[in-house]
Image 1 (tube, rainbow, N blue to C red):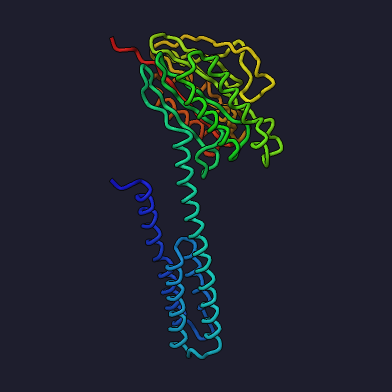
Image 2: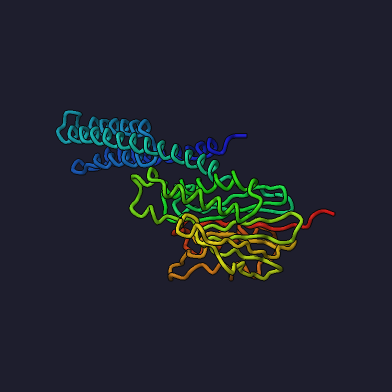
Length: 373
């Protein structure tokens, strides 16, 4: 099987080779018309359009070949109409040669930038696979679907995060959103994900796990070495997060919400918010490190779906400035599983914002399936 990246590159070359017919046809037309035109009419300057157009989609070699073909055509016109030493045609030839060299250099620079962009994309894809690992589709009695929508088309990862970890009694999840953007937000997300994956299966109590995550994030944000050279508001950085523990043999879920948007529970076409009575502060706010953490318990029955999401979903605006009505768009949906739910929400969300998000958005849908008898 051909790798996807190589296959895409092969498909992208085919249209470019087909486009080379456009400057060739242009050269032929200009040459024929210029030869048949009256002596007072000179169409030679139009030949410079051929290498200029080629440079917009082809590489330096193809651009140089089209430029050489245009110069040859101009020489043929000069010989047929007068001579190569004619002053008018000599200046046209010199100008065409200079312009061909110039656009060829532009084509070489554009091709170099495209290679750099391709390398950056591959690095971003590799970083996404390491930092934001894909969630398994099935874990114990759970079916899982996840999606990450980056606001920037060239960025694969950002400050939104999610992860799952298997324990002896069930499965734990975390979803979060780092305040800020750029590499600093990616670093904070990687820090929290690493701490969660390393401690989720070792901390028996959910409050102990969240306390550990808070200590990890706060200690990093307070590190003078990390603050050196950072943005001015780096000291105000924090991470909103929701941490869930879903046992295999109990039809409940345990959750501690650290300032994150409350998950949605879908049950038989009806939607409800899993709001905590005493939500914890976001991770990284060290002044609240001594706050008491309370684990909330919610019913999570077979065929129920819990939807986790970041604020990039509910704060997405349309052209009129209206927020995306997530609860309304989820209510009444037929129970077709988490994959179908996220596929519908992704299309509907992008349609709501006109195809471009203002902030990264992440969603995780978790469905409890009945255990086999």
